[in-house]
Each structure stands twice: as C-alpha cells, then as structure tokens.
Image 1 (spheres, helix red, strand yellow):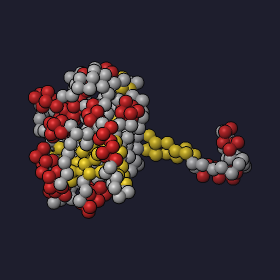
Image 2: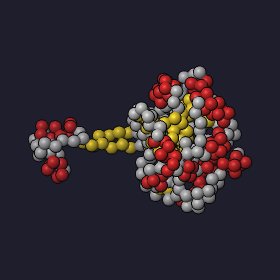
Image 3: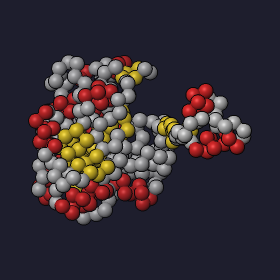
Image 4: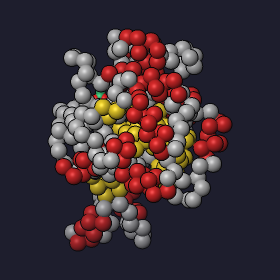
Length: 322
Ligand code: UVW
C-alpha cells in the first residue's frame, strides 16, 4: 500500500493550491472531443431516485433522503374552507393567493453521502493529511476550506468523455457476487472486448450490476456486501490519466477486507493520494443495456455536483449523452 500510494500520488502536480485533482485531466481539448460523442441525440440519467426508499440507513450517521412538502394545494384549499380566503396567515401568501397563482414548495433533507453522489477530495484522508497535503483541520464544522466540492462545482469541471466498462456483462452475469473484486487486468480485458480505450481525461464508469441487486433484494446489508474495484486499480487509473471513476455500488471499491484493520483502501489511494473523486450509487442498468445494444461504450458525460459551500460531497444527476 505504501508503495502504491507513492506511485499514484499527484500531490503538487497541479500546484500547491490545487483543488481539482485528476479533474485537471479534463482539458478544453478533451471537452471538445467529448462533445463530438453526442451523435444520435440520446440522454440517459444515471441517478437513483432521491427518496426514502434508497440503500442508506444501516449506519447510524447516514439516512436516505427525506422529502417534505412545505406548501401544497391542500394548504391553499384548507384556508377558504376554514374561512380564511387567502388560505394562509403569512403576509406574502395572503397577498399572492388573492390572485390566481397557486404553487407548491418542498424541502429535501439528506446526507450528502446518500444516493447518487460524488465524494469530494476532502471526504477521505489519513495520517492527518488530505489530498495535496492539506491538513486535516482544513475541514472544520464550518465545512471544507480546501478540496471541497464547491471548488469543483464552481468550475463546472465534471463533464467529459465517459467510458462504461460493463464488468457484469463481460462475466456473463446480471450482478457480480457479493464482495467480488475487479482487478486491473479485468478492466483491460473488458475494454478490449468492448472495443473501447480508457485514456487521459476520461470519466470511467464501472458496472457491477450491484444497483439492480438492491432493487431485487432491498437487502439492508447491500452496501456491506458490495463487489467493486480493488485498490490495485488505482495504479491502472493513474497510469491512464483517468479524471474520475464512478460505479453502481456503495463505494466504487469492493467491501472485501483484504488488509485487517484497513477499510476502503482504494478510497485512501484514489481520493487522498491521487486526488480522484469517486461517484457512488449510480444506476448503470439502462446505460449498460444501451451500450450493449449499439456497441458504443463511450459518450459525453455531464455530472456536475451542486455548489454547496464547504461540502465534502454532493448529490448528482449524471447524464450520459450519445
Ligand atoms: C465512506 O464511507 C468513508 O466513504 P463512502 O461514502 O465514499 O463510501
């Protein structure tokens, strides 16, 4: 692991104040080339629904999104029935509801690490240092002052060439086995079989079929059983200049415990040493079917996080464009 960390480290590569990490690989030329992949006018969302029925909830510190209505037709109808023609005692609404306009408002409450999301570079660290050597205390209760999701979102940086590697289909299964590991030579073999290359500035999307497993089973241990890439894939991504990686499981990587006492070793290497954002819990089912049908495993991918000041992650609605 130490050797791997040294090999993949990008600290200082884009300057001592860099906030983007491997997203720096998405150059203007890469973006122009990605736009050329939109050929048939098709768009596919890769987001799971943001609702209370998602895969979070097994841990104490994460919950599924909670969606609440703060104003709806029921409120506006109730007022007149109770003798208040405006339907509200709030002064602004009293005025508005005297006219024809009616509207509905809502809230969402959610951990930014629930549902389809990006891990920002400030999400994971070890030995007191974040990506680029930023000190751990640059993230406080006010949020991240370095390597937060806001730096990425403000640049609109997460758009480029997406490449799907459909590991499940290549293995001839709907879903990988629980805790299965995907190794670099398999990434290579799947790319070759699909006739697609993975190169500098690409956003790699790895399908394990594990999202469909959740839909089929609703297993509370779904996340803990995730198959996914192994920590050895970090070097493969680094050598190719990949900009970001996303998958349809809990944490991109397999939850298989290879080293006693070390959890999520790929996270440590990818986020903290390489400066690579991880896209988690993406729905790759329709994209997988589509790429299989037309034999085209590359597309323009737009997956901008929300510009949430100081956040260490963000929900995202990634869209593949062909
Ligand atoms: C951790 O659980 C630490 O990370 P993630 O949300 O990226 O899986």
